[in-house]
Image 1 (cartoon, rainbow over the protein chains, first blue to last red):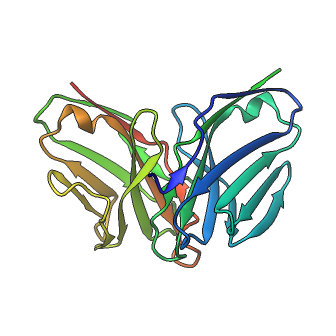
Image 2 (image 1 turned 90 degrees about the vertical axis):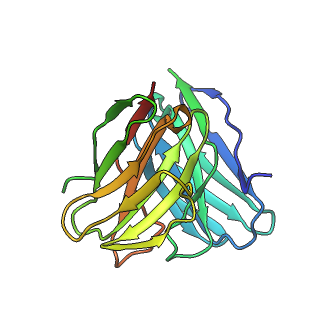
Amino acid sequence: QKEVEQDPGPLSVPEGAIVSLNCTYSNSAFQYFMWYRQYSRKGPELLMYTYSSGNKEDGRFTAQVDKSSKYISLFIRDSQPSDSATYLCAMSASSNTGKLIFGQGTTLQVKP
Amino acid sequence: NAGVMQNPRHLVRRRGQEARLRCSPMKGHSHVYWYRQLPEEGLKFMVYLQKENIIDESGMPKERFSAEFPKEGPSILRIQQVVRGDSAAYFCASSPAYRSYNEQFFGPGTRLTVL
């Protein structure tokens, strides 16, 4: 079993839709949770960084962490065609190990 | 402020040759991380380095792979005697010493193709 599971998709939605992206994990030691966006043939770009459980909002993006269920989510409101990319969740047990564990990534397509 | 720089962006090698991948971290960043991304897979951690020190190499294959981050110059990921299974995208990331090491900024990657 992988430490971090993420549905690869692809996920296709119409412009303006609310998008929900999810990851589950098995290691209860994970405390730091990140979401990265990766455009085709580019490097990952850090979108959201959260610690422990709870919600964090940044513009159209909301990250949610439920440690009791070992489940994290990224919501995108008012999705745009420019949001079309692969979204990767990443996790870490500590703030100073530098070792991120990534999910496989979910490919999102937002249709105009 | 320039981002993380990697070169070359594309590298083609024949089986048995050596591949050298270079990474210049963002200005002011002293921590460097290397990840490998195989087709249809997420990124896999390989190694974490600080200047002149390897901190964690738990993700590095035991043979043929090595990494360094010298006092001067870029970090180098070296793959000796490449095989077709080494074909992948290799990403470098960096972080500053004064922030969480989890806030990593990635470069554009080097795509290695082994013929």
